[in-house]
Length: 64
Image 1 (cartoon, rainbow, N blue to C red):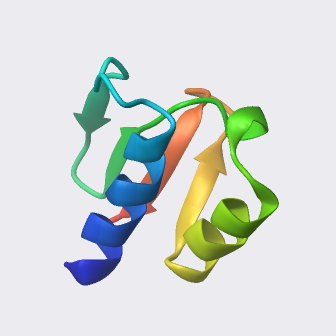
Image 2 (cartoon, rainbow, N blue to C red):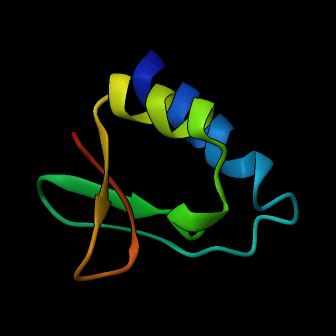
């Protein structure tokens, strides 16, 4: 659960008002701002936390 929390914390830095939507299915949670806006360091950290950019939905995903 810590990987989920840490990833959401990074994404929230780029969406301080919490305006990005969040959704899920049986396997994954989807949310977050555009990946082009994130720093290289945050992109690397998200990847290390097993977050991925979901091209279909144009948002970040994390398998649950």
